[in-house]
Length: 340
Image 1 (cartoon, rainbow, N blue to C red):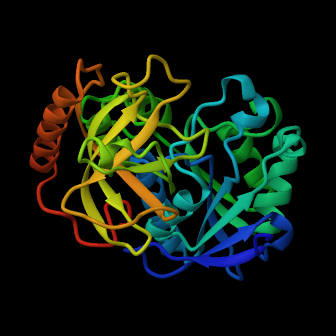
Image 2 (image 1 turned 180 degrees about the vertical axis):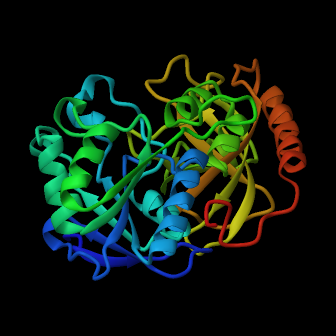
């Protein structure tokens, strides 16, 4: 099934549905012009949200539509696939978060070889001038775009003087320790298992999404802890292997406290090709197979390790559930921690 070129996306907490347009060829410039920002916006973290807030404020003051120009995949997957980073947010989640930020329109560009070889000047004319009628462009001071990353704030400013738009380059958002908030830094924290520190930069717990699939059936039958095996698509940033307290959101929007194991199950497997995400929902019974799941990592409880017996493992799992319950506290109100 093909994606409609123009549709709406709703984010809880924003002023209304945001228009999502796939491709500049389907885009009609807003009647009064637009205030635009451009970027991968992977994670839509606190630094992104600070810039989006400034974009909205300036757009409102000038009576312009606020527009985010972003990409259907991380540009690095095309430009340097051998070192492309795992993504913090998939397309659906990124659109939800941009909608929640109150943006009027998201223009989603297909990033392919043709786009990668487009010059910065061509991008400005095609996207900013013709598709969006830009009157204001707001980006980070370190923003680069176009083939060879030749485009920057200086080039934008020069082209803006010819095409009738102003340019604002904003300083990077800093955290309490005066370090820049960045997607790269968040990925490093996640890889180290520091999910609480990552959440502080994201402004929410890191969330992964997938479908519940059948596992080996050992959790319920042998251990007394039936788990949902969540199959997360490849290329998504995962925390380091270990045991976590998390929130589990079902497809009906209900949110459940949970303990999750992300690892290779060394008690039962001498070696495993890849880690498996197994989630035990506290105070829940029911069939989750085939359902879409959203798992938000709150706290790292312990590292994964091998146990000498299933009895020892069950004893530790019991303690993990107690620790997860204490770490999570009362359940959040639906529709969940990633909808704001």
